[in-house]
Image (cartoon, rainbow, N blue to C red):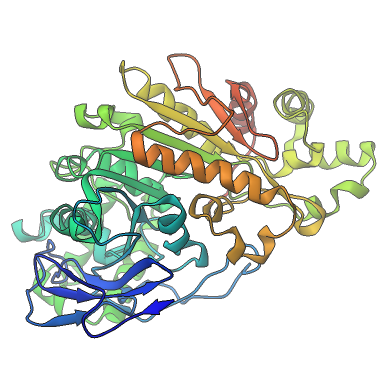
Length: 502
């Protein structure tokens, strides 16, 4: 039954009353403003209002620097939405509006690195099933991205001191809103789990290293989001960028604030292209400073981050692609040998041997799409975490093979619908009777972790990682824990191949 009346469901927040809707006993409130901000300035609290404001439409999403182009929609189904710089909005799904309900709160941070994406971009991001069947409050949010959220202009003046971290600062503002208001939606502000995939996962660990943020959440789930050698803001390149602005007589914060987004993007892109050609590493991502303490794999985890229980993992294939994989069952063994040798050269034979030991259940051609970029980073992340006694860390690998093209190993984003219990929303997930049992196991682990800090799967023990022992939960048709099973393989693979980032 659908309920949306003038007087219900209504929730009183710190800033005013909000009206959402109820569908079959679960509530939804969309497009809630959690902050406001001027371009290149830190977020501020939203304004209060009188009366009842509708929360029935998703909020505006951040503007991006490139045009959306439909691509690979059969594997990763998207939806796009009106864009604006004024994008500080969040969505809430909840099974209860009782202040005493104290439901666990799960806060989703979307992917797209630090450049792209939104809280609703993927069909699988919908929070209703996670809320309804997990019995918890689910929040998703938009924040500033690309040059609006991560362009370091601190050399232009003190008021721009944290321009390199404004996207993350927006998320901090959202977490403060959650702390102050989530009880009215049935949530427990003292039991908040951040979870995110790809760029969303990067935001989880970067917020673990942000003192203003890490006191506002209590657990983290990082899906395909540990990429050690990418997305760290480069101070040398940032300085060169400002010097180039000076040469163009554009090193004026007020002037940059007044430009249209299209003009600003054109200026930035032209300078970035020039600097890249000169050998600079121009990156849009969090800037290490007093606000953000830096990449934990390189800098170590701060004391508060060490205390936050974490699930970290990736998928088998991630960004790698190979046209040959679609025909893998038609190749003779000698043809497979030739294809692997063409790809990996002299390393092919050892890789083939190591792959067979780590993945005896897989087809040899799957080695063509094996990921080592994120998997190696996950291993380093776990190693660093385990240096501190009591840092609870759980590792996983999503290893399901989809029936697509006769058998395709999991790709970047393939695990998202399983965590949200949304496999029913994607046709490609309707390929086997094994999907639902796998979804239930992943969902059980995810929601148990959000509830009490331990991922529990009925009938399967998932132990914490310990020094020298990465206990990896393999999410597949048969779920099992393997310890250090692929370390030699992925290290040798990374040393002998070049992983591709989109």
